[in-house]
Length: 180
Image 1 (cartoon, rainbow, N blue to C red):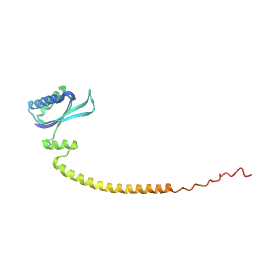
Image 2: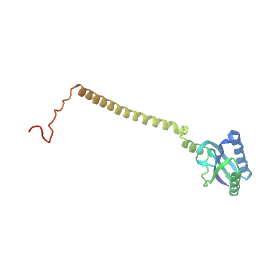
Image 3: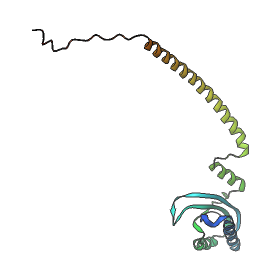
Image 4: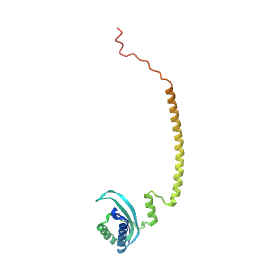
């Protein structure tokens, strides 16, 4: 038996009960063909990159399973005929690459921007220290900018209080035609 990963996009109208029935149908098909399902998880409703038929959204379902290679063609045929499935992709995982539940959890959590608890504490400390140092530098720069702006404004107000000299009118360059 080989390890596989399947990503299945289900129509968004199925609802929670329909999604459970779809999952049960997929699980029973794999087990009936001599395989086992390690992970079956809904990744939630997502907007599709492009419209597929009349669907703009779909519910993504991830399944990790082991099955004999002969069962994969039958599973593909079953998924093509299953009306609640918009699209699917089945990948064979290399030997020794079969993901455990914990590794998968970390993998998908990192894609969602979440961090595992052990890493989270160290990361939070690092981010807090970096943010504090940045804030101190930014604060010093802001104080310098404000004091510079105040000095500029004070200089402009002082210049506005003193009268500016009015330039004297100059004679036209071409000469004076009235002087004959």
